[in-house]
Image (cartoon, rainbow, N blue to C red; front, top):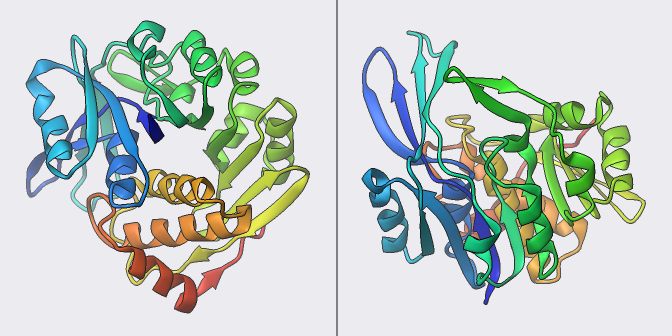
Length: 296
């Protein structure tokens, strides 16, 4: 029985610049797992990989993470090619993984399941319903809003959103994902709508402008903490969610949990790769960091 269990595909990310080509693991589950692995709770990851990428799961196990690997015909494989000044990216999806099924997850138990779909087909509605029947479900909605067609990532609406969101306790979306879901441009209006659809805790991240949390009819304005340097934003949202769920698990209120999450995300953006800070680093930033309050 885990306190928190993340379900999501690890990815094989190929990054090509004019200077080098790098192959690395990635995906919501990768960044979330690395961010939460040293926290005082019971954590597990359920992922699916093709045989050639089992090494990604083994590397996480070497860090002390409990990883269950389900079989998949392929691993999700992203190719990102950057121009000389890094301001333009061409992305292709060279492989997709098999979706998770109700049967595969039937014996996994947790207090909270955090879902990190990468693409719309990753997790069927029936799986969300099955998980919600035995635990709280947290969702990073990004993957349900995109599909692959001819190796290209295309934006879509989530066909099952009304049926699914009534089973989601905690939802994270950035302002663009919120607009795609609700057709609203104002984050507060969108957050209220998502709450009306059944989500009990709505988290809308606004990048460097902070974030807002809406629950029980109350908005909580969460500041962004100004980082010492902006190096790599990849995985910041996943790091935010790790901090938030950790704090909520230990009884923190919405404001406290949100600020802790925001501080973790700020520390993450200061370096490449997954979160590598300490609890003490987070507390120091909370105490001394420069804040930018959301204006939404």
